[in-house]
Amino acid sequence: MRRATGQAARRGRGRADPLPAVRLGGATGGVRPAGSGAGGGFTPVTLPGTPSAAPGIDADRLSTLLNAERMRWIEARPRSAALRERARRSQLHGTPLHWIGQFPPPVPLTVERAAGARLYDVDGHEYADFGLAATAALWGHDHPAVVAALRDQLDRGAVTLWSHEDHVAVTEELGRRFGLPFWQFTVSATDANRFALLLARAVTGRRRILVFNRAYHGSLEQTAAVLTSDGTVPAPGVEPNGVDVRESAKVVEFNDLDALERALVPGDVAAVLAEPVMTNGGAVIRPEPGFHAALRELTRRTGTLLVIDETQTIPAGPGGCTRELGLEPDLITMGKWVAGGVPAGLYGMSDEVAAAAARYTEAGDGGLGSTVAGGPLAVRAMRAVLTEVMTDETYAHMNRLAERYERDVAAVIDRHRLPWHVGRLGGRVSYAFTPVPPRNAGELYPRVGSSLRDALWLYLANRGVVLNAMSGAALMSPMTDEADVELHGALFAEAIAALAVPGGA
Ligand SMILES: Cc1ncc(COP(=O)(O)O)c(C=O)c1O
Image 1 (cartoon, rainbow, N blue to C red):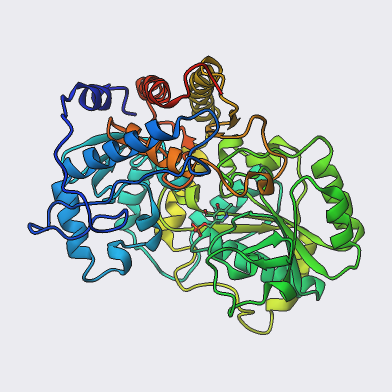
Image 2: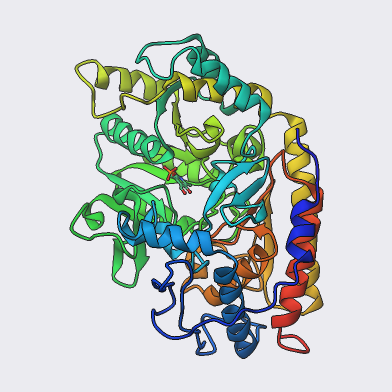
Protein backbone atom coordinates (compact mmCIF):
# COMPACT_ATOMS: atom_id res chain seq x y z
CA MET A 1 0.00 0.00 0.00
CA ARG A 2 1.29 3.48 -0.79
CA ARG A 3 2.48 5.47 2.15
CA ALA A 4 2.63 9.18 2.77
CA THR A 5 4.67 11.18 0.34
CA GLY A 6 3.65 14.61 1.54
CA GLN A 7 3.95 15.62 -2.11
CA ALA A 8 0.55 17.24 -2.31
CA ALA A 9 1.51 19.26 0.73
CA ARG A 10 4.79 20.47 -0.71
CA ARG A 11 3.37 21.13 -4.07
CA GLY A 12 0.21 22.90 -2.97
CA ARG A 13 1.80 25.07 -0.34
CA GLY A 14 5.15 25.70 -1.91
CA ARG A 15 3.91 27.60 -4.95
CA ALA A 16 4.35 31.32 -5.10
CA ASP A 17 1.26 31.51 -7.29
CA PRO A 18 0.71 35.27 -7.54
CA LEU A 19 -2.85 36.29 -8.26
CA PRO A 20 -3.19 36.56 -12.01
CA ALA A 21 -4.78 39.45 -13.79
CA VAL A 22 -8.16 38.15 -14.88
CA ARG A 23 -10.38 39.68 -17.47
CA LEU A 24 -13.66 40.45 -15.75
CA GLY A 25 -17.17 40.67 -17.02
CA GLY A 26 -19.21 38.37 -19.18
CA ALA A 27 -20.69 35.08 -18.09
CA THR A 28 -22.52 34.97 -14.80
CA GLY A 29 -20.36 32.94 -12.59
CA GLY A 30 -19.11 30.38 -15.10
CA VAL A 31 -16.22 30.38 -17.50
CA ARG A 32 -17.07 31.55 -20.95
CA PRO A 33 -15.13 30.85 -24.08
CA ALA A 34 -12.06 33.06 -24.32
CA GLY A 35 -10.27 33.85 -27.54
CA SER A 36 -7.67 31.14 -27.10
CA GLY A 37 -10.19 28.73 -25.68
CA ALA A 38 -7.80 28.19 -22.80
CA GLY A 39 -8.77 30.83 -20.29
CA GLY A 40 -11.98 32.52 -19.34
CA GLY A 41 -13.48 35.58 -17.74
CA PHE A 42 -16.06 35.63 -15.03
CA THR A 43 -18.10 38.10 -13.10
CA PRO A 44 -16.93 38.44 -9.52
CA VAL A 45 -19.64 37.59 -7.05
CA THR A 46 -20.89 40.17 -4.58
CA LEU A 47 -22.52 38.44 -1.69
CA PRO A 48 -25.67 39.94 -0.27
CA GLY A 49 -24.42 39.15 3.24
CA THR A 50 -26.45 36.04 4.02
CA PRO A 51 -27.66 33.38 3.45
CA SER A 52 -24.80 32.40 1.15
CA ALA A 53 -22.34 33.39 3.86
CA ALA A 54 -22.64 31.57 7.19
CA PRO A 55 -22.88 32.60 10.83
CA GLY A 56 -19.51 33.82 12.11
CA ILE A 57 -18.20 34.64 8.63
CA ASP A 58 -17.53 38.14 7.33
CA ALA A 59 -19.49 38.51 4.06
CA ASP A 60 -17.06 41.03 2.50
CA ARG A 61 -14.02 38.93 3.24
CA LEU A 62 -15.82 35.88 1.90
CA SER A 63 -16.72 37.63 -1.33
CA THR A 64 -13.11 38.80 -1.83
CA LEU A 65 -11.65 35.39 -1.06
CA LEU A 66 -14.13 33.53 -3.26
CA ASN A 67 -13.29 35.74 -6.24
CA ALA A 68 -9.56 35.41 -5.66
CA GLU A 69 -9.78 31.62 -5.37
CA ARG A 70 -11.84 31.32 -8.53
CA MET A 71 -9.32 33.42 -10.44
CA ARG A 72 -6.46 31.39 -9.07
CA TRP A 73 -8.18 28.15 -10.08
CA ILE A 74 -8.86 29.26 -13.64
CA GLU A 75 -5.46 30.75 -14.30
CA ALA A 76 -3.62 27.62 -13.20
CA ARG A 77 -5.71 25.30 -15.39
CA PRO A 78 -5.47 26.26 -19.06
CA ARG A 79 -5.67 22.65 -20.32
CA SER A 80 -8.73 21.91 -18.18
CA ALA A 81 -10.37 25.10 -19.48
CA ALA A 82 -9.59 24.21 -23.09
CA LEU A 83 -11.07 20.73 -22.64
CA ARG A 84 -14.16 22.26 -21.09
CA GLU A 85 -14.63 24.49 -24.13
CA ARG A 86 -14.23 21.49 -26.41
CA ALA A 87 -16.69 19.50 -24.29
CA ARG A 88 -19.30 22.27 -24.58
CA ARG A 89 -19.82 21.21 -28.19
CA SER A 90 -20.67 17.57 -27.37
CA GLN A 91 -21.77 17.43 -23.70
CA LEU A 92 -24.70 19.00 -21.87
CA HIS A 93 -23.21 21.92 -19.86
CA GLY A 94 -19.81 20.85 -21.22
CA THR A 95 -19.57 18.16 -18.56
CA PRO A 96 -20.00 14.37 -18.83
CA LEU A 97 -22.48 14.40 -15.94
CA HIS A 98 -24.52 17.58 -15.53
CA TRP A 99 -23.83 17.68 -11.77
CA ILE A 100 -20.18 18.44 -12.43
CA GLY A 101 -21.21 21.81 -13.86
CA GLN A 102 -22.77 22.68 -10.48
CA PHE A 103 -19.65 21.93 -8.44
CA PRO A 104 -17.63 24.83 -6.95
CA PRO A 105 -14.73 25.12 -9.42
CA PRO A 106 -15.47 27.45 -12.36
CA VAL A 107 -13.63 24.98 -14.61
CA PRO A 108 -14.16 21.32 -13.66
CA LEU A 109 -11.28 19.44 -12.09
CA THR A 110 -10.14 17.49 -15.16
CA VAL A 111 -8.44 14.32 -14.02
CA GLU A 112 -5.50 12.82 -15.84
CA ARG A 113 -5.22 9.89 -13.41
CA ALA A 114 -6.16 8.79 -9.92
CA ALA A 115 -4.03 6.62 -7.65
CA GLY A 116 -4.05 5.79 -3.94
CA ALA A 117 -6.13 8.54 -2.34
CA ARG A 118 -4.85 11.11 -4.85
CA LEU A 119 -5.99 12.81 -8.01
CA TYR A 120 -3.71 14.24 -10.70
CA ASP A 121 -5.15 16.75 -13.14
CA VAL A 122 -4.32 17.48 -16.77
CA ASP A 123 -2.61 20.73 -15.74
CA GLY A 124 -0.05 18.96 -13.55
CA HIS A 125 -1.62 19.49 -10.12
CA GLU A 126 -1.78 16.81 -7.48
CA TYR A 127 -4.52 16.56 -4.85
CA ALA A 128 -5.18 14.60 -1.70
CA ASP A 129 -8.64 13.25 -2.47
CA PHE A 130 -11.06 13.25 0.47
CA GLY A 131 -14.08 13.23 -1.89
CA LEU A 132 -13.33 9.67 -3.06
CA ALA A 133 -16.18 9.77 -5.57
CA ALA A 134 -18.75 10.03 -2.77
CA THR A 135 -17.78 6.54 -1.47
CA ALA A 136 -17.46 4.92 -4.94
CA ALA A 137 -13.66 5.14 -4.47
CA LEU A 138 -13.78 4.66 -0.70
CA TRP A 139 -11.02 2.04 -0.68
CA GLY A 140 -8.67 4.22 -2.75
CA HIS A 141 -8.37 4.59 -6.50
CA ASP A 142 -6.11 1.61 -7.06
CA HIS A 143 -6.23 -0.62 -4.03
CA PRO A 144 -3.74 -3.40 -4.80
CA ALA A 145 -6.23 -6.18 -3.96
CA VAL A 146 -8.88 -4.71 -6.28
CA VAL A 147 -6.43 -4.03 -9.11
CA ALA A 148 -5.03 -7.58 -8.93
CA ALA A 149 -8.53 -9.06 -8.97
CA LEU A 150 -9.57 -6.94 -11.96
CA ARG A 151 -6.41 -7.73 -13.94
CA ASP A 152 -6.92 -11.44 -13.36
CA GLN A 153 -10.60 -11.32 -14.28
CA LEU A 154 -9.96 -9.38 -17.49
CA ASP A 155 -8.24 -12.51 -18.79
CA ARG A 156 -11.28 -14.62 -17.83
CA GLY A 157 -14.10 -12.55 -19.30
CA ALA A 158 -15.93 -9.36 -18.34
CA VAL A 159 -19.55 -10.42 -18.85
CA THR A 160 -21.16 -13.84 -19.40
CA LEU A 161 -24.75 -13.74 -18.07
CA TRP A 162 -23.98 -16.98 -16.20
CA SER A 163 -23.15 -17.97 -12.63
CA HIS A 164 -19.59 -17.89 -11.31
CA GLU A 165 -18.02 -19.13 -8.10
CA ASP A 166 -17.34 -15.48 -7.19
CA HIS A 167 -21.09 -14.80 -7.03
CA VAL A 168 -21.49 -17.49 -4.39
CA ALA A 169 -18.47 -16.32 -2.40
CA VAL A 170 -19.84 -12.76 -2.45
CA THR A 171 -23.42 -13.54 -1.44
CA GLU A 172 -22.24 -15.85 1.37
CA GLU A 173 -19.98 -13.10 2.71
CA LEU A 174 -22.74 -10.49 2.43
CA GLY A 175 -25.02 -12.73 4.47
CA ARG A 176 -22.36 -13.07 7.13
CA ARG A 177 -21.76 -9.31 7.32
CA PHE A 178 -25.25 -7.91 7.01
CA GLY A 179 -27.38 -10.75 8.41
CA LEU A 180 -29.74 -11.19 5.43
CA PRO A 181 -29.71 -14.57 3.65
CA PHE A 182 -30.63 -13.84 0.00
CA TRP A 183 -29.00 -11.39 -2.43
CA GLN A 184 -29.25 -10.11 -5.99
CA PHE A 185 -26.86 -8.04 -8.10
CA THR A 186 -27.56 -4.71 -9.84
CA VAL A 187 -25.60 -2.11 -11.82
CA SER A 188 -25.89 0.72 -9.26
CA ALA A 189 -27.25 1.71 -5.88
CA THR A 190 -30.10 3.51 -7.63
CA ASP A 191 -31.08 0.22 -9.27
CA ALA A 192 -30.76 -1.65 -5.98
CA ASN A 193 -33.27 0.77 -4.45
CA ARG A 194 -35.51 0.58 -7.50
CA PHE A 195 -35.69 -3.22 -7.33
CA ALA A 196 -36.00 -3.39 -3.54
CA LEU A 197 -38.99 -1.04 -3.72
CA LEU A 198 -40.54 -2.96 -6.59
CA LEU A 199 -40.26 -6.19 -4.57
CA ALA A 200 -41.67 -4.48 -1.48
CA ARG A 201 -44.72 -3.47 -3.53
CA ALA A 202 -45.06 -6.96 -4.98
CA VAL A 203 -44.76 -8.60 -1.56
CA THR A 204 -47.15 -6.28 0.30
CA GLY A 205 -49.59 -5.44 -2.49
CA ARG A 206 -49.26 -1.77 -1.44
CA ARG A 207 -48.15 1.16 -3.56
CA ARG A 208 -46.77 3.93 -1.36
CA ILE A 209 -43.16 4.29 -0.24
CA LEU A 210 -42.12 6.29 2.80
CA VAL A 211 -38.84 8.22 2.74
CA PHE A 212 -37.36 10.69 5.20
CA ASN A 213 -37.36 14.34 4.22
CA ARG A 214 -34.43 15.38 1.99
CA ALA A 215 -33.02 11.85 1.87
CA TYR A 216 -31.28 10.96 -1.37
CA HIS A 217 -31.53 7.40 -2.61
CA GLY A 218 -30.31 7.88 -6.18
CA SER A 219 -31.84 9.24 -9.34
CA LEU A 220 -35.12 7.53 -8.57
CA GLU A 221 -38.09 9.83 -9.05
CA GLN A 222 -40.33 7.83 -6.74
CA THR A 223 -38.03 8.63 -3.79
CA ALA A 224 -37.26 12.23 -4.80
CA ALA A 225 -39.96 13.80 -2.67
CA VAL A 226 -39.72 16.50 -0.01
CA LEU A 227 -41.96 17.82 2.70
CA THR A 228 -43.27 21.38 2.38
CA SER A 229 -46.13 23.38 3.85
CA ASP A 230 -48.07 22.10 0.81
CA GLY A 231 -47.34 18.51 1.80
CA THR A 232 -45.28 16.07 -0.24
CA VAL A 233 -43.91 17.49 -3.50
CA PRO A 234 -41.18 16.43 -5.95
CA ALA A 235 -37.68 17.32 -4.78
CA PRO A 236 -36.37 20.62 -6.20
CA GLY A 237 -35.33 20.25 -9.81
CA VAL A 238 -37.16 16.94 -10.36
CA GLU A 239 -39.67 17.00 -13.20
CA PRO A 240 -43.20 17.00 -11.68
CA ASN A 241 -44.75 15.37 -14.74
CA GLY A 242 -42.98 12.09 -14.07
CA VAL A 243 -43.95 10.03 -11.04
CA ASP A 244 -46.72 11.66 -8.99
CA VAL A 245 -45.09 11.56 -5.57
CA ARG A 246 -48.21 12.91 -3.90
CA GLU A 247 -49.80 9.59 -4.79
CA SER A 248 -46.86 7.26 -4.49
CA ALA A 249 -44.81 8.58 -1.57
CA LYS A 250 -45.10 9.71 2.01
CA VAL A 251 -42.41 11.89 3.52
CA VAL A 252 -41.76 12.50 7.21
CA GLU A 253 -38.84 14.03 9.08
CA PHE A 254 -36.13 11.71 10.38
CA ASN A 255 -36.44 11.14 14.16
CA ASP A 256 -40.14 12.15 14.14
CA LEU A 257 -41.81 9.01 15.48
CA ASP A 258 -45.26 10.58 15.84
CA ALA A 259 -45.34 11.56 12.17
CA LEU A 260 -43.99 8.15 11.23
CA GLU A 261 -46.74 6.40 13.15
CA ARG A 262 -49.43 8.61 11.59
CA ALA A 263 -48.04 7.79 8.14
CA LEU A 264 -47.82 4.03 8.67
CA VAL A 265 -50.99 3.28 10.62
CA PRO A 266 -53.37 3.53 7.60
CA GLY A 267 -51.55 0.44 6.27
CA ASP A 268 -50.96 1.70 2.72
CA VAL A 269 -47.15 1.93 2.78
CA ALA A 270 -45.23 -0.91 1.16
CA ALA A 271 -41.86 0.06 2.57
CA VAL A 272 -39.91 2.60 4.55
CA LEU A 273 -36.65 3.29 2.70
CA ALA A 274 -34.10 4.81 5.06
CA GLU A 275 -30.46 5.57 5.50
CA PRO A 276 -29.69 4.29 9.01
CA VAL A 277 -27.81 7.54 9.74
CA MET A 278 -28.67 10.34 7.33
CA THR A 279 -25.74 11.66 5.35
CA ASN A 280 -27.20 13.67 2.53
CA GLY A 281 -27.81 17.07 4.03
CA GLY A 282 -24.05 17.67 4.23
CA ALA A 283 -24.17 16.61 7.87
CA VAL A 284 -24.18 13.44 9.93
CA ILE A 285 -27.75 13.14 11.24
CA ARG A 286 -27.93 10.46 13.90
CA PRO A 287 -30.98 8.53 14.99
CA GLU A 288 -32.07 9.54 18.48
CA PRO A 289 -31.96 6.84 21.16
CA GLY A 290 -34.80 4.39 20.54
CA PHE A 291 -35.56 5.65 17.03
CA HIS A 292 -34.51 2.53 15.16
CA ALA A 293 -36.21 0.20 17.65
CA ALA A 294 -39.43 2.19 17.27
CA LEU A 295 -39.09 2.31 13.47
CA ARG A 296 -38.76 -1.48 13.41
CA GLU A 297 -41.66 -1.99 15.81
CA LEU A 298 -43.94 0.36 13.83
CA THR A 299 -43.05 -1.17 10.47
CA ARG A 300 -43.67 -4.71 11.79
CA ARG A 301 -46.93 -3.72 13.48
CA THR A 302 -48.28 -2.13 10.28
CA GLY A 303 -47.05 -4.83 7.86
CA THR A 304 -44.62 -2.37 6.24
CA LEU A 305 -41.23 -3.59 5.00
CA LEU A 306 -38.06 -1.85 6.18
CA VAL A 307 -35.38 -1.20 3.56
CA ILE A 308 -32.02 0.08 4.86
CA ASP A 309 -29.80 1.89 2.34
CA GLU A 310 -26.12 1.40 3.28
CA THR A 311 -24.70 3.14 0.22
CA GLN A 312 -23.19 6.07 2.16
CA THR A 313 -22.98 4.63 5.66
CA ILE A 314 -20.44 1.85 5.15
CA PRO A 315 -17.65 4.01 6.66
CA ALA A 316 -19.41 3.26 10.00
CA GLY A 317 -18.02 -0.28 10.09
CA PRO A 318 -17.40 -3.47 8.12
CA GLY A 319 -21.06 -4.50 8.44
CA GLY A 320 -22.31 -0.94 7.93
CA CYS A 321 -24.73 0.67 10.37
CA THR A 322 -26.84 -2.48 10.13
CA ARG A 323 -24.29 -4.31 12.22
CA GLU A 324 -23.09 -1.31 14.27
CA LEU A 325 -26.63 -0.45 15.38
CA GLY A 326 -27.99 -4.02 15.46
CA LEU A 327 -30.69 -3.34 12.84
CA GLU A 328 -33.03 -6.01 11.46
CA PRO A 329 -34.21 -4.77 8.06
CA ASP A 330 -36.28 -6.81 5.59
CA LEU A 331 -34.14 -5.59 2.70
CA ILE A 332 -30.74 -3.88 2.42
CA THR A 333 -29.45 -1.89 -0.54
CA MET A 334 -25.96 -0.70 -1.44
CA GLY A 335 -23.75 0.36 -4.32
CA LYS A 336 -20.84 2.71 -5.10
CA TRP A 337 -18.12 1.18 -2.87
CA VAL A 338 -19.17 -2.46 -3.31
CA ALA A 339 -16.96 -3.24 -6.32
CA GLY A 340 -14.04 -0.88 -5.63
CA GLY A 341 -15.11 1.58 -8.34
CA VAL A 342 -16.54 -0.79 -10.95
CA PRO A 343 -20.24 0.13 -11.38
CA ALA A 344 -22.28 -2.27 -9.26
CA GLY A 345 -25.00 -2.53 -6.66
CA LEU A 346 -26.60 -5.17 -4.46
CA TYR A 347 -29.77 -5.82 -2.54
CA GLY A 348 -30.32 -8.38 0.15
CA MET A 349 -33.56 -9.77 1.60
CA SER A 350 -34.96 -11.82 4.44
CA ASP A 351 -36.31 -15.38 4.12
CA GLU A 352 -39.87 -14.05 4.10
CA VAL A 353 -39.22 -11.48 1.38
CA ALA A 354 -37.27 -14.05 -0.63
CA ALA A 355 -40.15 -16.55 -0.46
CA ALA A 356 -42.64 -13.99 -1.73
CA ALA A 357 -40.17 -12.64 -4.29
CA ALA A 358 -39.57 -16.15 -5.61
CA ARG A 359 -43.29 -16.56 -6.26
CA TYR A 360 -43.47 -13.12 -7.86
CA THR A 361 -40.56 -13.74 -10.24
CA GLU A 362 -41.57 -17.29 -11.24
CA ALA A 363 -43.59 -16.16 -14.23
CA GLY A 364 -41.26 -13.64 -15.89
CA ASP A 365 -38.65 -10.97 -15.36
CA GLY A 366 -40.76 -9.10 -12.82
CA GLY A 367 -39.28 -5.80 -13.96
CA LEU A 368 -36.05 -6.68 -12.13
CA GLY A 369 -32.50 -6.97 -13.39
CA SER A 370 -30.10 -5.85 -16.07
CA THR A 371 -28.03 -7.82 -18.58
CA VAL A 372 -24.80 -6.48 -17.15
CA ALA A 373 -25.78 -6.74 -13.45
CA GLY A 374 -23.48 -9.09 -11.57
CA GLY A 375 -20.97 -9.10 -14.44
CA PRO A 376 -17.92 -11.16 -13.44
CA LEU A 377 -15.60 -8.16 -13.56
CA ALA A 378 -17.63 -6.33 -10.93
CA VAL A 379 -18.20 -9.47 -8.89
CA ARG A 380 -14.52 -10.35 -8.82
CA ALA A 381 -13.83 -6.86 -7.49
CA MET A 382 -16.62 -7.28 -4.91
CA ARG A 383 -15.04 -10.47 -3.67
CA ALA A 384 -11.70 -8.69 -3.24
CA VAL A 385 -13.38 -5.76 -1.47
CA LEU A 386 -15.30 -7.97 0.92
CA THR A 387 -12.58 -10.47 1.72
CA GLU A 388 -9.36 -8.46 1.45
CA VAL A 389 -10.15 -4.76 1.81
CA MET A 390 -12.95 -4.38 4.37
CA THR A 391 -10.87 -5.66 7.26
CA ASP A 392 -10.73 -4.51 10.87
CA GLU A 393 -7.30 -2.99 10.13
CA THR A 394 -8.73 -0.96 7.26
CA TYR A 395 -11.43 0.42 9.52
CA ALA A 396 -8.97 1.13 12.34
CA HIS A 397 -6.89 3.25 9.92
CA MET A 398 -9.92 5.09 8.53
CA ASN A 399 -11.26 5.78 12.03
CA ARG A 400 -7.95 7.03 13.36
CA LEU A 401 -7.55 9.52 10.50
CA ALA A 402 -11.17 10.62 10.71
CA GLU A 403 -10.79 11.30 14.44
CA ARG A 404 -7.79 13.50 13.71
CA TYR A 405 -9.63 15.34 10.93
CA GLU A 406 -12.62 15.89 13.23
CA ARG A 407 -10.39 17.19 16.05
CA ASP A 408 -8.71 19.66 13.67
CA VAL A 409 -12.05 21.05 12.49
CA ALA A 410 -13.48 21.19 16.03
CA ALA A 411 -10.41 23.12 17.24
CA VAL A 412 -10.90 25.80 14.57
CA ILE A 413 -14.63 26.06 15.33
CA ASP A 414 -13.79 26.54 19.03
CA ARG A 415 -10.96 28.99 18.37
CA HIS A 416 -13.21 31.34 16.39
CA ARG A 417 -16.30 30.61 18.49
CA LEU A 418 -18.26 29.70 15.38
CA PRO A 419 -21.82 28.44 15.85
CA TRP A 420 -21.07 25.36 13.73
CA HIS A 421 -20.61 21.70 14.50
CA VAL A 422 -18.63 18.80 13.11
CA GLY A 423 -19.99 15.26 12.85
CA ARG A 424 -18.32 11.92 12.23
CA LEU A 425 -19.57 8.50 11.22
CA GLY A 426 -16.57 6.17 11.32
CA GLY A 427 -14.35 7.26 8.43
CA ARG A 428 -16.74 10.03 7.24
CA VAL A 429 -16.52 13.58 8.60
CA SER A 430 -18.53 16.67 7.74
CA TYR A 431 -19.32 20.00 9.31
CA ALA A 432 -22.40 22.15 9.01
CA PHE A 433 -23.19 25.73 9.88
CA THR A 434 -25.61 25.02 12.71
CA PRO A 435 -24.58 25.17 16.38
CA VAL A 436 -25.80 21.67 17.19
CA PRO A 437 -26.26 18.58 15.03
CA PRO A 438 -29.67 18.69 13.33
CA ARG A 439 -32.31 16.09 14.28
CA ASN A 440 -33.36 15.82 10.67
CA ALA A 441 -32.36 17.11 7.25
CA GLY A 442 -35.31 19.53 7.22
CA GLU A 443 -33.54 21.58 9.89
CA LEU A 444 -30.71 22.19 7.44
CA TYR A 445 -32.96 23.89 4.88
CA PRO A 446 -32.95 26.49 3.54
CA ARG A 447 -29.23 25.79 3.57
CA VAL A 448 -26.97 28.60 4.63
CA GLY A 449 -23.35 28.91 3.66
CA SER A 450 -23.34 27.82 0.04
CA SER A 451 -20.81 30.54 -0.91
CA LEU A 452 -18.70 29.63 2.09
CA ARG A 453 -18.73 25.98 1.03
CA ASP A 454 -17.62 27.01 -2.47
CA ALA A 455 -14.89 29.26 -1.10
CA LEU A 456 -13.57 26.60 1.28
CA TRP A 457 -13.64 23.94 -1.42
CA LEU A 458 -11.65 26.20 -3.77
CA TYR A 459 -9.24 27.43 -1.09
CA LEU A 460 -8.37 23.84 -0.19
CA ALA A 461 -8.29 22.52 -3.77
CA ASN A 462 -6.07 25.40 -4.94
CA ARG A 463 -3.60 24.13 -2.33
CA GLY A 464 -3.89 20.41 -3.03
CA VAL A 465 -6.86 19.12 -0.98
CA VAL A 466 -10.16 18.00 -2.51
CA LEU A 467 -13.37 17.48 -0.51
CA ASN A 468 -16.72 16.17 -1.73
CA ALA A 469 -17.76 18.84 -4.21
CA MET A 470 -21.45 18.73 -3.26
CA SER A 471 -21.46 18.60 0.51
CA GLY A 472 -17.90 19.35 1.63
CA ALA A 473 -17.81 15.99 3.45
CA ALA A 474 -14.52 14.11 3.80
CA LEU A 475 -13.94 10.36 3.56
CA MET A 476 -10.87 8.50 4.78
CA SER A 477 -9.69 5.49 2.79
CA PRO A 478 -7.21 2.77 3.70
CA MET A 479 -4.87 4.58 1.28
CA THR A 480 -5.25 8.04 2.88
CA ASP A 481 -2.09 9.44 4.43
CA GLU A 482 -1.95 11.11 7.81
CA ALA A 483 0.13 13.92 6.26
CA ASP A 484 -2.84 14.79 4.06
CA VAL A 485 -5.14 14.99 7.06
CA GLU A 486 -2.61 17.25 8.71
CA LEU A 487 -2.45 19.41 5.58
CA HIS A 488 -6.23 19.72 5.56
CA GLY A 489 -6.21 20.82 9.20
CA ALA A 490 -3.61 23.52 8.54
CA LEU A 491 -5.36 24.84 5.43
CA PHE A 492 -8.80 24.83 7.04
CA ALA A 493 -7.38 26.82 9.97
CA GLU A 494 -5.79 29.31 7.55
CA ALA A 495 -8.97 29.76 5.52
CA ILE A 496 -11.20 30.30 8.53
CA ALA A 497 -8.70 32.74 10.08
CA ALA A 498 -9.03 34.77 6.87
CA LEU A 499 -12.83 34.66 6.88
CA ALA A 500 -14.09 34.67 10.44
CA VAL A 501 -15.69 37.74 11.97
CA PRO A 502 -13.00 39.07 14.33
CA GLY A 503 -13.79 38.27 17.96
CA GLY A 504 -16.17 35.42 17.14
CA ALA A 505 -19.80 35.17 16.09
C1 LIG B 1 -27.85 6.92 0.18
C2 LIG B 1 -27.73 6.76 -1.31
N1 LIG B 1 -28.35 5.74 -1.92
C3 LIG B 1 -28.26 5.55 -3.26
C4 LIG B 1 -27.52 6.40 -4.04
C5 LIG B 1 -27.43 6.18 -5.52
O1 LIG B 1 -26.15 5.86 -5.93
P1 LIG B 1 -25.84 5.84 -7.51
O2 LIG B 1 -26.02 7.23 -7.98
O3 LIG B 1 -24.41 5.40 -7.59
O4 LIG B 1 -26.78 4.88 -8.14
C6 LIG B 1 -26.87 7.47 -3.45
C7 LIG B 1 -26.07 8.42 -4.27
O5 LIG B 1 -25.53 9.39 -3.83
C8 LIG B 1 -26.98 7.66 -2.05
O6 LIG B 1 -26.37 8.70 -1.45
